[in-house]
Image (cartoon, rainbow, N blue to C red; front, side, top):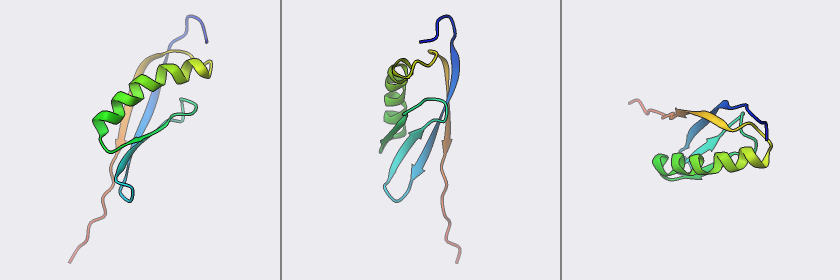
Amino acid sequence: MLKGIVMDYTVNFLWDSEANVWIALSDDIIGLALESESLDKLMKRVELAVPELLELNSQAPAKNLEFKCNLRRQLAYV
């Protein structure tokens, strides 16, 4: 673990319409890949998992987590 350093990390939330689940991924946090049917539940799971993942990967502790959501819907026009 890096002493005295804290970082801001970004977590991306994506909706998988085929599986009907939200997925959490991060380019900043090694190994973060979680899914849940509820966005609220997934955010709570991420908040619990991030400190452990950062410690396991010897990454600096999180000062802030920035959550970004991406929901894409295909529209059918008549």
